[in-house]
Amino acid sequence: MKAEYDFSKMKSRPNPYATKLKKPVTMRLSEDVIEYFKTMAEEMDVPYQSLINLYLRDCVAQHRKLKMDWSA
Image 1: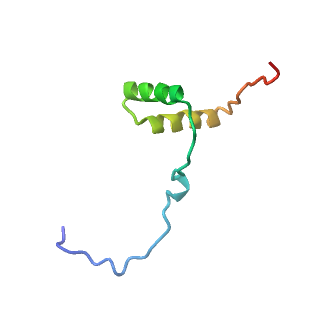
Image 2: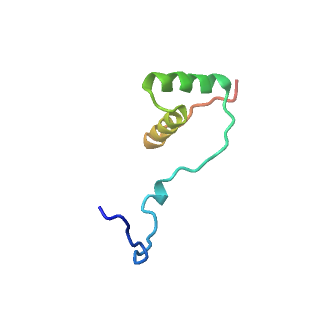
Image 3: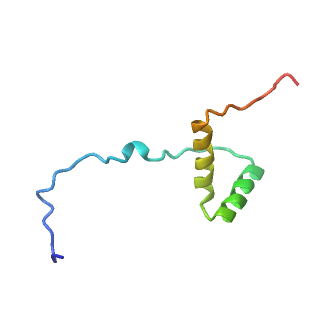
């Protein structure tokens, strides 16, 4: 390896992963929901926010829709 590198001749290019970056959002979730995902995340050894994202991504991939009945 060289002791120093000359980056002055490098061409810049857009980040190829920019479209895959996550967007920060603020959500209000029930404490029991957060606790559920935190417990599951501990068991799986992943961050709970990543687990929630994976779950929601799976919902999108499977085109899941929530069945709700407001007439009761």
